[in-house]
Image (cartoon, rainbow, N blue to C red; front, side):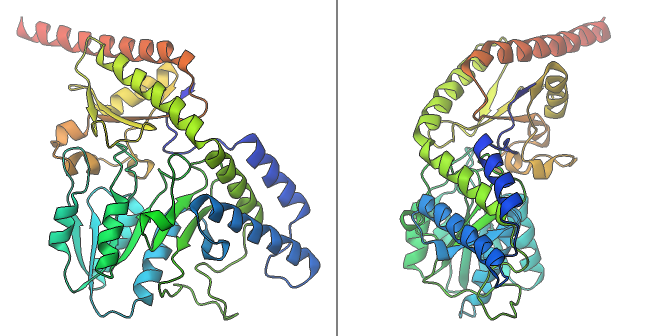
Length: 388
């Protein structure tokens, strides 16, 4: 099986796996315990936070571990809203956010917040001028994903952050698809909270983290009876933290080399798809898209069908974000960029990572070409038969 679904999850790196097993075996103590076994675990937790913070140009004390990015998104947004001293009840997000953001904002809407769902252009990009029109004296928070998980659109986070800071409006970004793939500097981006995930960068599942700006007031959703300010309570997953930090260090140290390799592979993959004897529409456009994610439509073929055919042929792809898999509704991102229901259902996503090699390209394209030929020839024969 050739795996082309890295935006959904990645395999753990050998080094991250080794660290996880070693810490789980030898440093099993509860990091909150006061004895030496607990102190050793706490030291590993703090060292892990410092390692991740360094990759973000941040301070370790401002890194808060979570059980994943979905929880990180919820806890970060809630903490910022609960901590602000403003009375405004207006918040803004986009129509193409990850489901975890969408769900949080829908919940807040039911709790009395006024939510504006910011539209995007046909490439999935937020227009700063449109955001400025929505902002009012009542606006207290904005959340915009750094890189869209389905079509790979890179949002102008720094420009948005600069504007929102001038208006004293809190800003959160979901950086799950950008962290470890492009430079992510919390100081440069001008955000107040940033969410990341371990299993997207070859770390263990069940681990995420939030960086929270120490200059803003925030309140944890869960009360810590030890009177310490924690974003998340409960027993720390120290082996997961250590493995996450290991994966983060590996990803950032090899970032430029991997970015260049994937950029070359992705560009060649695009060219080869467009050379096929079938209409192929690349969603998201060029210039503002991550090379790690490629959203595609073959007009006349349902994405679900193509995904299943690819699976039978030994190619693992998806029909979009894992959070939408199984939904009968048209893809939300496709609808937001102006596609019809039928067009939205044609969408498939290829996403690339470490184990994708240039030598695989001929095999991948060959399998896709075979599937398309078989499908469209069958459609043509059916139409001719019906016509006759």
